[in-house]
Image 1 (cartoon, rainbow, N blue to C red):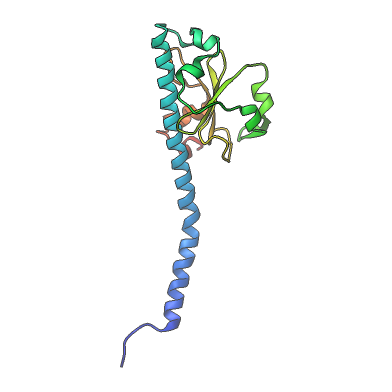
Image 2 (cartoon, rainbow, N blue to C red):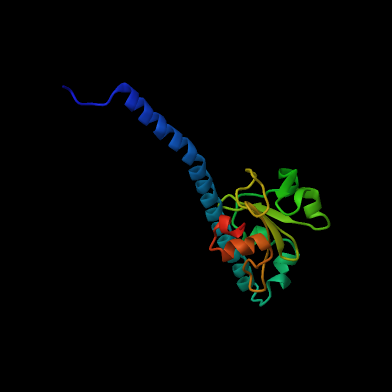
Length: 183
């Protein structure tokens, strides 16, 4: 008598494995996407903080918001590493905010002149003369949700990214875990 599996047993086993894989794949891909966004946010945060502290040292100042390069709009050109410029007003029709719904980009930029650049690591960044800015860690790729891949940021007196946005602040305090910041 020969020992082995019947065709029915093999098909049932393959079917069970397929169902388990189908249930776990979305979770794995979501976790991967969140880790990618978190890593991009860390890199952009470090890159912008370095640009701020470098500008502060170059002008030998003790207050980032009083820098000449910030007031005349040359901070982005001189200190932010990047590949050309980006215009949020042209790149985004709208963005989504979990707390405030959908907002037109024109509302976001109303009344301010923003100087924008695509960072060397791929994020899009804009800053105004007050040191307040806007960061999209994955540039024009979706989901374009505030707190997920888009953040309002502000430079502190020391030239580093400050706790301007409550989402960014909660991501930083949650040790860069996007899921923990939304709990």
